[in-house]
Image (cartoon, rainbow, N blue to C red; front, side):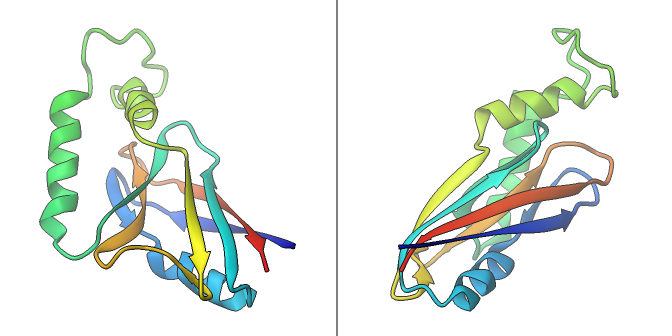
Length: 139
């Protein structure tokens, strides 16, 4: 068994869902491993990771509309507003999504389905540089 790690830096430009599939799959290819498990972990509390459809952009837009309705900015329910009205909603969005993903490695490729992509979901309105740690174990 071998293990490899890598860190992606993703520059975000406000609340949006960013497709990072190409960066992830390129690193997996470069690893030379053929079988194993890929884990992705985001080191933030106001951004998350998703696996979702990467074919129709309406899916991504609909997800953001849904979360905007579910967890609106400036909701008077929230006391934690240290960094603005999107501060606590960003934390709630992260709690409702995922901070890590596990994807099998089969035949040297991440075993994503036909229409699946890997996304970083930025929950804040300001730009940030987000760190995603990739860990691959296998052979």
